[in-house]
Picture 1: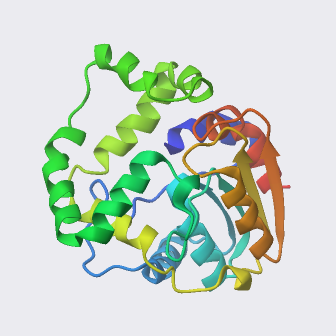
Picture 2 (picture 1 turned 180 degrees about the horizontal axis):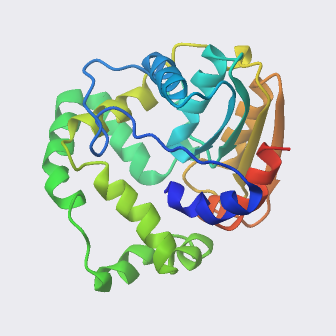
Picture 3 (picture 1 turned 120 degrees about the horizontal axis):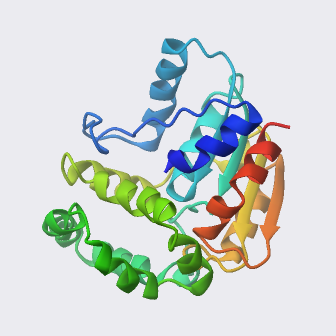
Length: 250
């Protein structure tokens, strides 16, 4: 998905580095991985590339990884932009602000973790297949119009859905571990994230309702909340990427 930032980043003179998480795509699987294991890996990448200071752009499921990096490495992370960001699921009493399919998946996991893992294994051959172009209109019909419209662009569609498909390429284990990280305790308090955070959210985001994002913004001590009228979960990071990057690096 970082391909969608390429042209805007070049126009702003920025360098984008987008590492795969362990077990995702071709990255080696890391057993028993937790969210707290991510900052040391990110630190290794920065040292290898000889980067002392950097800023983080996190879209959707990247949010927890950005928060934990800012919490663990405030001396290196200058600022963070969270766009359509995932929220902590652990302890979330009212799940009505989540997408219905996510609520159903959580219900299955709550009732039978073993069944949830089995379903991930069963799903892998299907979700890792490259979909024929004629199937795309059917997928777009399940999205709200603001997101479907932006994903009718072939480049945007490929960036989003091909990224999701290739996440399963090596095995289902990496995706399952990632899913567990989202629903387990993150391991640190958001209130201790002192790095400046720009929190972007669309009023039409159905994956994570606006009220959930507002609660996260209230917990962050150094947060600027950017509520974008009429933007959806996908349309916000795609249509506003130049504005988001410029704001992050100001």
